[in-house]
Amino acid sequence: MKPLPLAVHTAAEVRALDRHAIDDLHIPSYTLMTQAGEAAVLALRSCWPSKQRIVVICGPGNNGGDGYVAARLARSMRIDVSLISLVDPAKLRGDARRAHDDFVAAGGIVQPWSEDCLANAEVVIDAIFGTGLSRSLDAAMIERIHAINDCGAPILSLDIPSGLDADTGAVWGAAIMAERTLSFIGLKLGFYLGEGPNHTGIVLFDDLDLPAGATEFIAPSALRIDENAVAQLLPRRRRTTHKGQQGSVLVIGGGIGMAGAARMAGEAALRAGAGLVTVATWPENVASITASRPELMCRGVEGASELAPMIERADVLAIGPGLGTGEWGRALLDIALESDKPTVIDADALNLLAQEPCANCKWILTPHPGEAGRLLGIGTADVQSNRLQAARDIAARYGGTVVLKGAGTLVVSGDSLPYICDQGNPGMASPGMGDVLTGVIAGIAAQTADLPGAARAGVLVHAMAGDMAARRGERGLLATDLFGYLPTCVNPAQRF
Image (tube, rainbow, N blue to C red):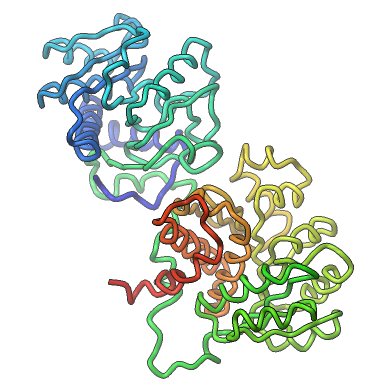
């Protein structure tokens, strides 16, 4: 299959690209549909080469037309194809009708939905609804989608899992749970937002052989973060470099009983390449932190006055892991925010900021959905229902760069295009992962003056390390498991 593009689009943008190809580049619409069907069969053979009994389920529009083409081409390869139409074929129009007629002319048989139509399926191709769906499904369609999901066969969705909103990742009553989603012309925002990550499976891509540059006709709504984000910020080091040239990070956190959070953030900053890392923590935590990671400098602080000289010596601050929301945490946050140092803010520092909001262009906020809700004064569900808008709202209200954590972590900064991380895994939903991310971002920020770039690179490095650690299995993954993989991820020029 073709490599995924960086651009991520709304449904309207993809439709505009489609019209551009047809109206301006003079590519017949049925040619595009045929290309989509060919790509579907290529994906089928690539992902499930031994499967021979395929059920193709077609809906009423051009997505269904793609399915008819795929079914016809699969039959020509001597694959056993059952085609199920969820609408009366007599109601098909345009290219979908032509695709249906070509399928029948080639000897294909169209069957209506029945309770046992999926009984022998080895693979199901979902060609029910495309990107234009914007209404709740009726009860009968919801029941059919549940039956498809429950049939036990892997599902290949064409363009988008049917029932999923292409822009928000909302589910219109029910949506296909695809093992693979083959996206045409452009990637859709809904793959990465809302419930999208639960439904798309592995995303594949085909540009339908559009001419080079054709997809640049319409600006995207977001960009995926790729490894160039790391390589550009963290080139191979000069042989004569020393630790003083790699930046100094001050991690502020670790209140009573919370030494682990600050310690993990500190080690993560070291693993990300920061030259010097100091942890300012509650005095009783110093011994345990230095004993477990002697490369960290650690200072006990009981009040803000003790913190001031350490802030002065640091290049980047990271505050929040294990900070607490009591008087001690508030005092340390206040003095940190009085400085003009670039600052990564997480965890309890975000909760304190939500209580007394202010704005700053030199910080990176890293909320999870619950913290994001507190920053905006809304519920977690409201954040999750429109993650991109929530990240934009936080950036508009508080300034700086916002990292909205979760499946499909978002990085939003000012008027720049938002970035989406499509790496990472469910095993990373475990204690301390946010503390590690804070340290990684701070460690990278200490090595560059580009704060938004450091946020993007840090998010990607954290996700990549999580995926490497999860090769042994996602369940039971610990935040500290990432430490062994972070150096690999922050040295892309040295990987083989």
